[in-house]
Length: 170
Image (cartoon, rainbow, N blue to C red; front, side, top):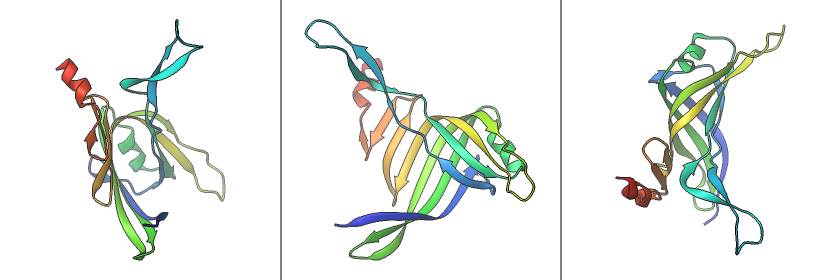
């Protein structure tokens, strides 16, 4: 079945339940498995292999417009609950163009703030960067990814890829 995601058509973001009205975009975290270099007899060189259940640092960057009290919500100490809700148009042969709901939930910790520059006649744009402790993504009501670095949870399309690892340490 042909299906193509076209564009984000509406979005909303909340921090600890409070809506951020000045958010203009979110850079989602890169997901990279941690690796270990393996070398020795029987190998022709070095292998850089993923480590079971280990992920590199995951950062989310929030693009913001102007200077606002909204920004302070993103700079609070401690873990913050982020909810990013958006609709994206999906094109399919059967249905034409249909909006599809997406939800991203993250538990994050504030890392840095770039207030941006101030220039006459131009919008002031800044950003806030957070370290991601937990990331959960839903598309059309179905969980497609959950990474919880503090609870050893790694689910892809509902399949728990870290269950064996948790069993070994419990």
